[in-house]
Structures are given as C-alpha cells and as structure tokens.
Image (cartoon, rainbow over all chains, first blue to last red; front, top):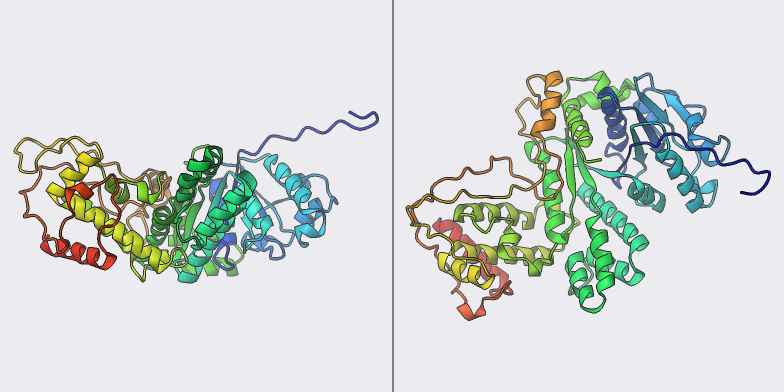
Length: 310
Length: 191
C-alpha cells in the first residue's frame, strides 16, 4: 500500500443473487416483469434492489409509480457519487428499493470495460437478497455483458414470430459473447457459424466439440464446459391462448433439439387488460390488480425463481 | 451432450430404452411437431433443411423402435439386453420413464385463475417445476405402469427394412426424408 493512501473500504454485505432480465426486443414487457418480479420477491420477504440498466430508455421508476429520482446510475458511473447506496431510492413498497436508469449512456462517462466492471462489483455488493437488472433492448455489448455477469439470466418473449426470432437472436448473441471470453477465437467463430446456420457440415455446437476432440482435446473440453454453463430462462409474456402458454416450453425444446443447449422456462404470464391499466395508474400490476391472471402468472414466476438452486 | 448424429434412437426420442411402442409414438408425435413448417418455435432458429433433417432422424428412430424385430436388432447393436416379449403374460417390469426435468405451463383453467389465489402461491411452487432442461413435459400425467396390451400387428412399413448388416449404433438416414415420412404416416395410420 502506498504511503498516504487510504486503505480500500470494505464493501458491504454481498448480494445473494443477481438476476438479469433481457430479451432483445423493445416493448415486450421486460420492465414490467422486472418491476413486478421485484415486488413479488419483496412480498415474499426478500430484500430486493431493482436496477434500471436500460440505457437511454429508463422507465422502471414509472412502472413502480415513482417520480424520476434525483440521483441515478449516471451519477455513480460519472463518479458524482461514490457508492451505489447513494442512488438507492425507496419505492414505498416494503423491502424494495430502486436504482433508476442512467440519463447518459454508460460509455459516455468512462472506458466501457472499467465502468462495467466497477458497476458490476458494486451491484454485487449491494446489501440485498436479490438484485434485479432491467436490461435495455437489443444485443449491445453492455447489455450482453450484464446478462452474462448475472447469476441467472431471464429472456422475456412474446408468443409471436418476431419476438421468438429476437429472443433466439439475443440468446445466440449472449452465448457467442460468452464463448469469445472463454474459448479460443477460432472455436468461437466456428460455433458462431453453426448458430447462424452457415456451416455446411456442423449442425450444432456439440458437433463442434466432437470434431475438436479429434484434433485438440483441450479446446474441445473448453468448449464443452462453456456449452454446459450457459443456461438462461425463458419468460413468456402476453399469452392469449392456451397454445401460447406452451410457447416457452416449445422454444426451449426446439433450442435443445436443434442446438443441444439447455434453456429453462420460468413460466408464462397471461395477456391481461389489468397490466396496461396498472401502467396508466403508475403502479405495479401486482399491487394494482393482485387477483388478475397476469398477477397469478407473475407469482408463479417468483416462486420458481425462489426455488432455483443458490 | 452428444451430437445429434451420435445419439441413440432412444436418446433422440427422449424415451427410456424400456419405452413401450405407445410411448415411443407419443414421443415422436411431440418432437416431430417441432419440425413442422409453421411451428412458431422454429421461426428464426433453424433452416427448413435443418428441420427436415431432424424430422427424418426422428422418423427413422420411430421406424426402428416401432417394429419389434427391428428394435431387437437395433438393441443388440447398441449393447442392450433383449426386451421382454410383449406377448408375455408375466407382469411387466415397472416402466422407469425419466420424466423430463422441465416446467410445463400449469394446466390453464378457463378462467386462468386458481381457486384460492393468495393461499395457492405456496402450492404453485409445488405444482410448477422450474425447468432445468429444455424438454417440456406435455400437459399430461406420466403414464402409469400398466400391463402390456395385446400385441398389435406389425405396423405396415412402406419402405423396406434395411438389411440387418446395415444396422450400426446410429445408422445414417437410410431413406430419403420424404420416403421416411411416408413410412411414419403409414405407421400412424396402421396404429
């Protein structure tokens, strides 16, 4: 330690679980799921912090019925405040706090990697049982990196072709981003081609493992470990028909059959008029319409999330 | 996980090696639906050619496992002991089908509401299993072990069975996809 320099402060108690909610497409209900899932976990007795990481599109505070806070994530990233605790905002709901979204893009304040790393460290050190990250739309590197850094990644999708397509795009992008960090570049590129359907011989990443094992067993093992450790969960939103409720499970099965990779299904939420009415009322629908079908679906999600292995 | 080409027919259909013909056909019906042209889950995931390839593989698996003789030959080729004859009067060994570890959406009532919302939340945790694998369970109960039904006539197979010598651990598709599909339809019609 250099003389004259204050010793580093001990970071407070570590958050138990970080949950990232993404999905790739805008308007599919990520923020609503994030806000209401946070509320449900808090009602179940957990201490929850929900963080709006939707860069440039922060609206989680609206979903929770809070006025735009004075201190936001931007202030932390820009070092106007030194601790994320300064950005914590009470929501009026017991055991639930909010860190509102940045008004600037993350990369406007600091080099991307350093800013993300610092933010992630502080998110993990929040004094909470659950930290929920409401990610923005799209497959930008910041979004993908926060998704991958979480303990569990949730992908929200609608039972519509465009949303299903975007969900796959998001999952593939996240998976490829992960591979780039843990396997050799050539291997990652090969798997990327396979996921894009552009390899004439290899159909799925396990074909890549089999081929690699013949000439580079170590690389094959690296890839195999990476494949086994990627396990997002699907949340099907706005289900209107009985068949819609099966879409999440069918998507997971298709992903497994065609690519040999595992997707979990956390549950489905019914399309419900009560949801937009709650948004208009600027309240979580769990609070505004606790007996609504959407609320029941959300509760199942929360129970399933609580039962996930630590 | 094995590459698809290295999977056994049982692994491909996600059934136990002791699965009955009915269970095999049910598994096939569930999985082949994934390869349907208008399947929503397929959108943006796989090309039509890839879907057709998987469909052909599933159909081949069904073809082999639905025929007692072909299945017996195949089982020998992958090192399985002989199955008990379906005509046997001995009580069937309880079927140990490994239910997929997945969560299916809970049965949806017409009202989409459980009877006791507030009190059912803990119960909901028990009845809805978090998915840890991709294979969904169909919204039907796991079949109870039951005595093997009367042996059915062998399904009519349009395509001639391949020579036994052609059987390998995972033989390559022996028929063109469209011919194999005809076989599957014939089997379905005969059953």
